[in-house]
Amino acid sequence: MEYPKVSETIPSFDGNPLYYEVRGDGPKTLVFIYGIACLMNHWHYQVEHFSQEYRVITFDLRGHHKSNPVHDLNSLTMTTLAKDLAFLLDHLKVEKPVGLGHSFGAPLLLAAHQLNPSLFDSYVFVNGFQKNPIKGMFGLDIIEPFFYFVKSQFDKNPLLWNSLWKTLVDNPISMQLAALAGGFNIKLTEFKDIEIYARGVSQLNLEVFIPLFESLMRFDGTDILPTITQKTLIISGDKDNITPKSFQMDFKRSIPHATFLEVPHGSHCTQLDYPDYVNLRIEEFLK
Image (tube, rainbow, N blue to C red; front, side):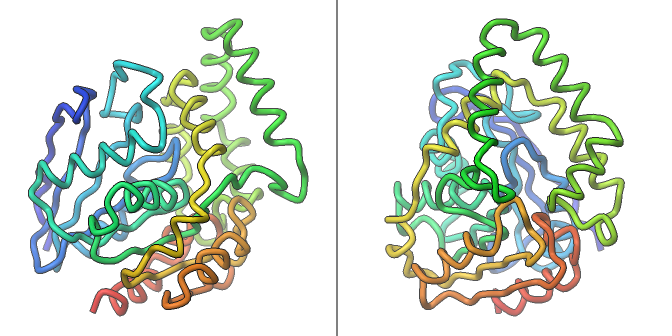
């Protein structure tokens, strides 16, 4: 049975557009949060599965897709996104939902927890991180300097760099490189999901991506992790080179009561690589 989608764009706490979708009904509400520059499709297997038995909420992050335009680019911070999330839950009269965050969605949940430690009933962190994952990525220290080079060049010529961004991201070679870098397991993930992801990323303007990415690099939730008393599931893909297992082990050390799940051959998008297995383990966690 497929539950109908209820969708709406509302003004957030500061008037910025905030788009959300709701499916299903049930005793628990699940809120799925995707990563930076991603889109709801990253959770489509989970949304389809869990909306059969639960109320499922997905939404576009500020500046992403239908949560546009951004009225104030200075508002593109982790704290503001956490306020958007809290505002959405209040608007929908949701109390004590389960927060499920993939990649950038994990620190966003940490930021929301810092604002209100009792906002969520439990957490599922998928390939997440609590602090800057860029330093030392792929065993190198070049990603952060490259980011600041692009930022400086973008400031000089935004039109050129936005055009380059769209061209570089939305093409088959980039999709293959993203898979080889550990973003996807190309032997497992449906290629159409990689294509949808690439098109979604290419649609995000650099004027939005750059300040959000900088906020990501500056965020440090190390001190927030030990304050989590809620039931927690940590999912890690052992082939994830974007946010390697060491980041998820930081979660486990700081939240000793958490359940830790390492998925063999799982990439950065474990929920797309092994959707049935991930759904099963989340289901066991929820029950």
